[in-house]
Image (tube, rainbow, N blue to C red):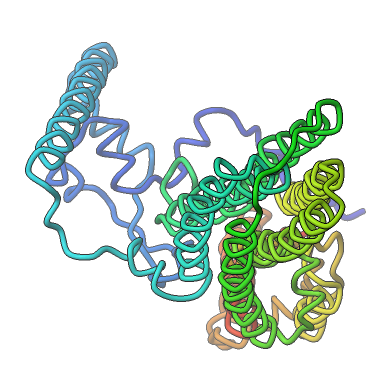
Length: 459
């Protein structure tokens, strides 16, 4: 009776993980080695996980550990050196922080003469330009409305002045959010700062509610409880007329920018606004729409007060402006909160990305697809992918010498020979699978430029 050959079960312990690979940077940082120490070690070329390089050099962890003991003599000496380097690094960071502070103070004293940066250039076009125009116009409107309120004592004019003040402050906050959103990603924020626009818009919505709506309601209620006679409103009407023209001009700038962005995205103006794809311009659009309506409400109520001599109409105008600001702030808070929670992109876009993967021969099925809007037209795509092992293996075999493989198979006589053969080609097939993942990720980004981050998890 033939005896069935059984491969001996291998016990994998901590020693086996010493055969793991480690990069040169980690070897120098974690084991306190120099680049010259690594030149004597075995070098292995592996497929790179980074898009800009096809392969990179790694070392066996066991070789690196042995070299570190040769250099430092003992694990204790290596630990002491690590501690000393850590203390030196902390001291260096503290010194760097102090030097940066001194440099900032020096620049503040003498003036900063650096060329115009990328941050400054973003305020010359797109949402940045819309925000800067709005800040200038609303700042002037705020100044003249406060003068008119001081002259007339009108509750509606006070609400309009507060309205313009809140708009100016909120738009300054939006400008800060725009400048932060274009900062380069760093290790602490690997996906960048694009959400700063949503955060600034959310805070802006809260500010409109508290400063604009709250003060307008308060002043309107006080006007109803303690009505006061109002002086001549002629100058107030002139200022409101000027404000209507300037606010209308800013509104037109915001509308044109949103229409241009909506056309670029292939969607309607209304849908683009409701989805808050451009939060900064959205805030300007809503604030200026509210400003135009607010001026109309204030002028109407002040006109009724002039005709009837009853200051109650003027107080009702203040309440109307406050209610309008409350509606705007509620919409901004809701839409920006939705965006910050990780809103999905449109179903049609998700379907297009999914179909691209499903139509690839190496993919058998797609599960648990998630495509999240990161802001500023950036999308993060994640999916569980069931790869067809036969296609992946065939892709590997197409690059092999079949005569050589047949010779290797003929040399397999024992379970140990079979293990060696399978381990060699099994590892290569896994590398081929990784290359297939890289290819699909690059294809997704190439076909869909808005996709910046792709996570394909293998089932």
